[in-house]
Length: 466
Image (cartoon, rainbow, N blue to C red; front, side):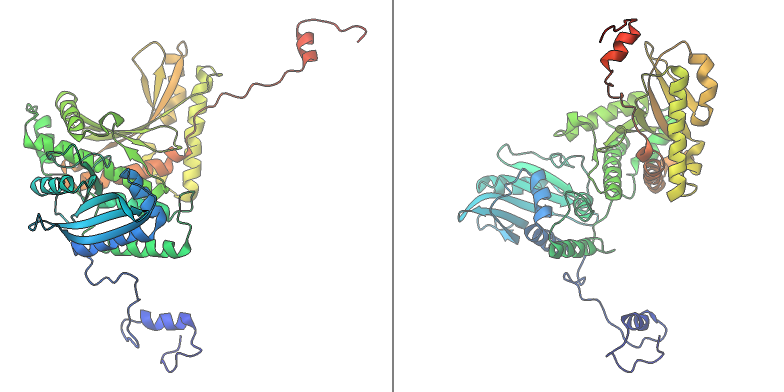
């Protein structure tokens, strides 16, 4: 690179970039021009404007968001910010979406946006629901850093309105939809200009001071619950620490699903489908589980994976279990089935070592195979490396399945609000990257055509004069 800048004409771009990298003796200073300036990335109205504009400009992003809202995808989309109706002068609503067909409004939504640590307020949401009802607006959509498993769930208790549908997105969910659209897959953005717009939107939202963030720490109640359980103290369903712990678990569950979604380029689902539209019943169910079993559980559903991923937080043992189930070959006996699952895990080791050396190694000692036996609720658990040693104990039984389990002892980190989140998220990504993505279920072989002559020969028949 030239030491002195004398002329731009004919200068290699690489040398030009070199001048920019020389921070000690800057010859030229500049800032990359952005479609969306980073001047006020933490401002809620700026976030609202960028988000709504991206819906209008990027067809595939609009398709995915509108699909979650059961909103009409036909017609022309118009978006507005800072909306006030004269009948409600004290309420300035962050956003309004209109879908127009044949010159008439066919669908609409009001939006309330929060960023940073600003949580939704029940009173404000209920006022906006009344405004939506008054003007026949069919839905109210909220966006914040609060997590839910489904857009039809709502993160805080509110008095709902039967005439207005209420939806909620976390910022992480919207970021994940955007990231997935940039993967090379069947759902990615077709138009290259719209791809660049989507990238600019992501740069804006992911700016360090944008106020858009994932779930970074459990609520304070976690430590109190862990301490009480280990002291043998009785937990109560009305204890604020218990409620906080369960709510934190639900948010962490969703964050894990979204983190994995961004790694895989497809949307990972979470939670129990039974509670899809009822977060309160899910909360009550998990509170009961924490009180009775000292455990909280989650399920992540990854399309194409060997099975759903079950995640158990065991409060008494202070450990986390992550589990997938594998269907064994039913045309083999016990010894052959044990060899089959061991070879599967060895294959995981060999494949992961090629792309991430030592990844499998750091999990190896914590990787367990649970052998599911027919006609009994008692199952055998054994380290994957010692599968051969269990044969004599179960050789007279029948195997119906395997569970491959990663168990991690969190120790003191189990009650640490930040370390709990960091450790479980790292564990999930490692487990998927090093094991789950390489596991396969056994498929029954296709039937083979047997020649008729062979059938007759096996039956001892002789063909004469043919």
